[in-house]
Length: 490
Image 1 (tube, rainbow, N blue to C red):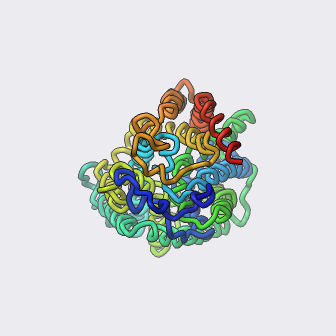
Image 2: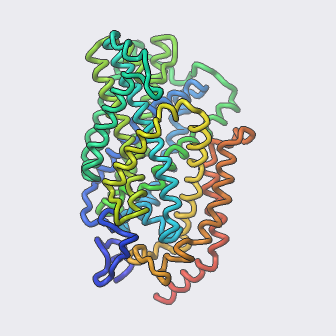
Image 3: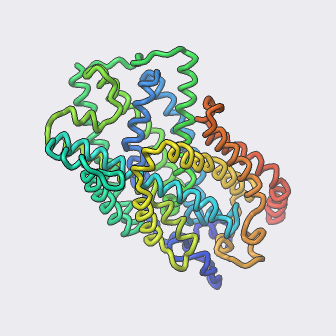
């Protein structure tokens, strides 16, 4: 079988028997590939159109950047993300396998559990936190529409009020029902919620523009800073947006594996990232600038802004919209990955659906509202783990495109015998670990130690480059062997 044929095979080569410890129906190369350009475009709408990204973009205006500076910095950031997503997307589309299986190429058939579990833990924690943040938005709307519900907030259990529990569990159950039906259900849900949120955001923008007299200053900021500080914030915004999307950049192959061809992946990413994502954050900044003119303060939380409308139906629509928005990003960014990652740990017992249910229950048991209110957990634990994602991305990309030059034997990714191609040493690739451990520690120090605060925003990028550089040095002999084998075939 040729390289191209092997890359697009819907299953293992006839006669090959995959190791049951390494495969199940969900981890095997995708057979049916239904994800078209619109599906990927809608995926990015679901991932970008959320309270966190709105607040992030609006916060840049408050920090001292004007609308044009926010636009240019985030456009650069999303273009870089676009290219990174294409790199990982090509691997997934070409070979049809999810992130933990892709990780076997560089980390080994058993070593792949290291990047998979790091990604899973981060996703599970943020899955719970995002669900909690959505429930807070719903609470704001409910209290504005029905002030009598304030009595439901006077007592708490495990740190959450009765109203908080009702909102949180409602969203938690709805998400569980969606994801329990598998990836096809995920595709249909995000096809709906992405465009729906855009419509509501446009309505919000028109409303605030009308109240502002259709005139909003785009070259001013509520907190003017020096030119040097604006440059620092401009580059910092790029670094932060890269770090934010570094999580999904790492496992985008979980989605691209269902696309029929690479052109579909590129087109879906183009419309969803540089075009749609930049447009959304600019809309967020314009609305925030409008709130400053209309209400005398920059309101960076859209839920609080909608609450000022004072109309029960508007509040109800706002609550539903923000809940759907957060569920959309939650399912895309924080559910799919741990579902596959946990399935990779024990494929014989854990399927995609089972892994998803484990993730969902774990996200509830960690009481995410307590995690979110604890800066130590969010900043040091999750921030430290997040810094590991850059080195993982750097190693996986360099190994696939530079060391192995895309010459992958998919069958061997499911072969646990000591003489298989990706078994390396006891199932682990020592060179990948030697490159990952020091650079991950270095990136975590940059991200967490206050002394390095000026470069903390660039920790993902620095971790990616340093890990790729170290792995490059370690793998020069293997690269030479790959080139020699390719030359011999020609």
